Image 1: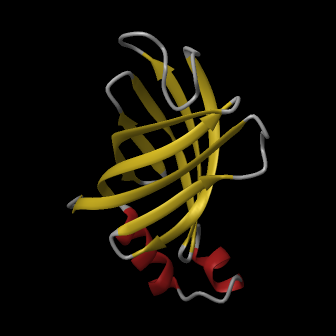
Image 2: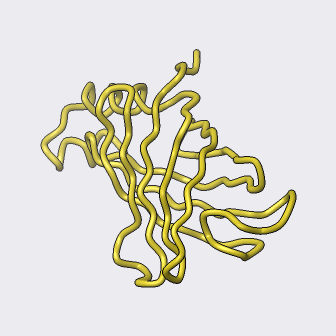
Length: 134
Protein backbone atom coordinates (compact mmCIF):
# COMPACT_ATOMS: atom_id res chain seq x y z
CA UNK A 1 0.00 0.00 0.00
CA UNK A 2 1.33 3.42 -0.87
CA UNK A 3 1.39 6.28 1.61
CA UNK A 4 -1.32 8.00 -0.48
CA UNK A 5 -3.56 4.92 -0.21
CA UNK A 6 -2.85 4.84 3.51
CA UNK A 7 -3.84 8.48 3.91
CA UNK A 8 -7.03 7.92 1.92
CA UNK A 9 -7.94 5.02 4.21
CA UNK A 10 -7.31 7.17 7.28
CA UNK A 11 -3.83 5.83 8.08
CA UNK A 12 -0.72 7.91 8.39
CA UNK A 13 2.44 7.04 6.51
CA UNK A 14 3.94 5.90 9.81
CA UNK A 15 1.08 3.43 10.38
CA UNK A 16 1.52 1.99 6.89
CA UNK A 17 5.27 1.56 7.45
CA UNK A 18 4.72 0.01 10.89
CA UNK A 19 2.33 -2.61 9.47
CA UNK A 20 4.80 -3.45 6.72
CA UNK A 21 7.63 -3.91 9.23
CA UNK A 22 5.36 -6.01 11.46
CA UNK A 23 4.61 -8.54 8.72
CA UNK A 24 8.07 -8.88 7.18
CA UNK A 25 9.93 -11.90 8.48
CA UNK A 26 9.93 -15.67 8.94
CA UNK A 27 6.61 -17.16 10.02
CA UNK A 28 5.48 -20.68 10.89
CA UNK A 29 1.92 -21.72 10.27
CA UNK A 30 -0.59 -24.44 10.99
CA UNK A 31 -3.82 -24.90 9.06
CA UNK A 32 -6.98 -26.94 8.83
CA UNK A 33 -8.59 -27.44 5.46
CA UNK A 34 -11.58 -29.17 3.95
CA UNK A 35 -11.42 -30.41 0.36
CA UNK A 36 -14.54 -32.02 -1.11
CA UNK A 37 -15.73 -32.94 2.38
CA UNK A 38 -12.38 -34.41 3.49
CA UNK A 39 -10.74 -32.73 6.48
CA UNK A 40 -6.99 -32.19 6.51
CA UNK A 41 -4.33 -30.30 8.38
CA UNK A 42 -0.81 -29.14 7.76
CA UNK A 43 2.07 -26.97 8.81
CA UNK A 44 4.75 -25.00 7.02
CA UNK A 45 7.02 -21.99 6.94
CA UNK A 46 6.51 -18.64 5.22
CA UNK A 47 8.73 -15.66 4.45
CA UNK A 48 6.92 -12.34 4.01
CA UNK A 49 9.00 -9.60 2.39
CA UNK A 50 8.29 -6.58 0.18
CA UNK A 51 4.80 -7.74 -0.78
CA UNK A 52 5.90 -11.29 -1.64
CA UNK A 53 5.41 -14.61 0.17
CA UNK A 54 7.69 -17.66 -0.15
CA UNK A 55 7.30 -20.90 1.76
CA UNK A 56 6.75 -24.59 1.89
CA UNK A 57 5.70 -27.69 3.75
CA UNK A 58 6.83 -31.32 3.64
CA UNK A 59 5.21 -31.92 0.22
CA UNK A 60 4.48 -28.51 -1.30
CA UNK A 61 6.20 -25.19 -1.92
CA UNK A 62 4.32 -21.97 -2.37
CA UNK A 63 4.87 -18.40 -3.42
CA UNK A 64 2.69 -15.41 -4.02
CA UNK A 65 1.95 -11.91 -2.87
CA UNK A 66 0.32 -10.10 -0.01
CA UNK A 67 -1.25 -6.69 0.49
CA UNK A 68 -1.70 -4.85 3.76
CA UNK A 69 -4.35 -2.29 4.67
CA UNK A 70 -3.61 -1.48 8.30
CA UNK A 71 -4.05 -4.77 10.14
CA UNK A 72 -5.97 -6.42 7.27
CA UNK A 73 -4.05 -8.90 5.10
CA UNK A 74 -4.94 -10.24 1.65
CA UNK A 75 -2.78 -12.94 0.10
CA UNK A 76 -2.70 -15.07 -3.03
CA UNK A 77 -0.56 -18.21 -3.10
CA UNK A 78 0.42 -20.49 -5.96
CA UNK A 79 0.98 -23.97 -4.55
CA UNK A 80 3.04 -26.71 -6.25
CA UNK A 81 3.67 -30.32 -5.25
CA UNK A 82 7.32 -31.49 -5.15
CA UNK A 83 7.59 -34.64 -2.97
CA UNK A 84 5.66 -37.78 -2.01
CA UNK A 85 2.05 -38.45 -2.89
CA UNK A 86 0.06 -35.28 -3.63
CA UNK A 87 -2.16 -34.97 -0.59
CA UNK A 88 -2.06 -31.60 1.00
CA UNK A 89 -4.08 -28.54 1.66
CA UNK A 90 -5.50 -28.64 -1.89
CA UNK A 91 -6.30 -32.35 -1.84
CA UNK A 92 -4.80 -34.83 -4.33
CA UNK A 93 -3.63 -32.25 -6.91
CA UNK A 94 -0.19 -31.18 -8.10
CA UNK A 95 -0.78 -27.44 -8.13
CA UNK A 96 -3.32 -24.74 -7.50
CA UNK A 97 -3.98 -21.24 -6.30
CA UNK A 98 -5.71 -19.95 -3.17
CA UNK A 99 -6.72 -16.51 -1.97
CA UNK A 100 -6.71 -15.73 1.74
CA UNK A 101 -7.92 -12.85 3.90
CA UNK A 102 -7.21 -12.17 7.53
CA UNK A 103 -5.76 -10.01 10.26
CA UNK A 104 -2.32 -9.21 11.59
CA UNK A 105 -2.02 -8.65 15.35
CA UNK A 106 1.56 -8.28 16.54
CA UNK A 107 3.38 -11.57 15.99
CA UNK A 108 0.24 -13.52 15.05
CA UNK A 109 -1.75 -13.68 11.86
CA UNK A 110 -5.05 -15.45 11.19
CA UNK A 111 -5.95 -16.20 7.57
CA UNK A 112 -8.87 -17.97 5.91
CA UNK A 113 -10.30 -18.56 2.48
CA UNK A 114 -13.06 -16.30 1.28
CA UNK A 115 -16.17 -17.38 -0.54
CA UNK A 116 -14.19 -18.53 -3.58
CA UNK A 117 -15.15 -22.22 -3.59
CA UNK A 118 -17.69 -24.18 -1.57
CA UNK A 119 -15.67 -27.39 -2.11
CA UNK A 120 -12.57 -25.94 -0.41
CA UNK A 121 -11.98 -24.06 2.83
CA UNK A 122 -8.89 -23.28 4.87
CA UNK A 123 -8.19 -21.59 8.20
CA UNK A 124 -4.60 -20.85 9.25
CA UNK A 125 -2.79 -19.40 12.24
CA UNK A 126 0.71 -18.06 11.67
CA UNK A 127 3.28 -17.01 14.27
CA UNK A 128 6.19 -14.71 13.46
CA UNK A 129 9.50 -16.25 14.50
CA UNK A 130 11.93 -13.49 13.47
CA UNK A 131 12.03 -10.24 11.55
CA UNK A 132 14.12 -9.40 8.50
CA UNK A 133 16.87 -6.80 8.75
CA UNK A 134 17.12 -4.16 6.08
